Image 1 (cartoon, rainbow, N blue to C red):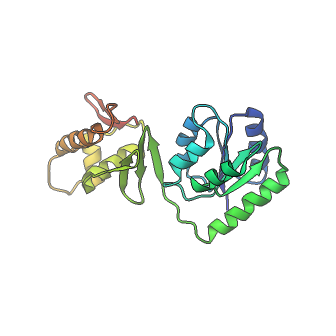
Image 2: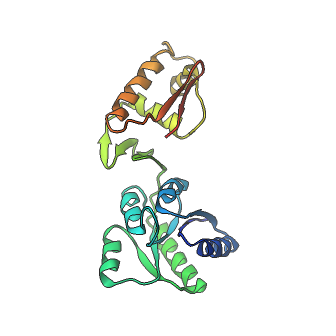
Length: 224
């Protein structure tokens, strides 16, 4: 199996070392240099995450806390030193293991392999997307803002799914209508405009920034 590993560390030499090493082992490697970028790269749906604790903007503990409810894969903390209280704190927010720097690449690979083997027996993966403070779970067909669920109708979520899974691509009302119901469905594609308005209103109750952009004369796109 071609596993995907996400390496999150603010030390570029560490990222370069681990990227080269795991690519040689046959992994698909994704990288992030800080916590904010890490939230975006989690959308790659990794099989395992190596997460540095001490990073700018958002440390590893906070990153783990924010993604653990939506990410089931193992999370291994990388740290130069760790006090018992910090280790307990990391495990409480959902970390699975600690690897102390400097580490042996052979030991790191053995730890990663062990976690992946255990995960294969119980793995339940889903596709998610982080957009600002919103989290979209496609398998659960739900969207939340900072942990607060936002109620969407089936059609509203279907539209969010179409747009958000094709971020940046513009869809006409007719194209959205066709994806939802097909050409044979009776009705008027202008109803999409009303659905978009309702979605914007619901999301707008939590965030002033619009997630759906209107491309005048063309249609709509997800800008998240």
